[in-house]
Image (cartoon, rainbow, N blue to C red; front, side, top):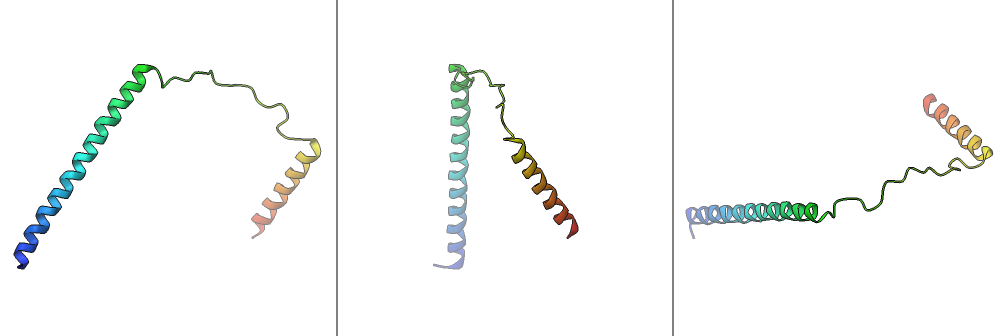
Length: 83
């Protein structure tokens, strides 16, 4: 097999491979768009429950825990600024 034949074969394989990948991507885009339309048409894209606006009442813990965390963060920031 000569170099010319090998280059010709590699060009054919390159074009064939790129065509197959392009066709697959094109088909995948078509399927995704069709699926999105189906989901929207069936109403499956809507939330079934309204969003919750309630916030937990005790998010910070006890005042002692909050003070300890605040002190630790303050010390960490002082140490970080000093370096």
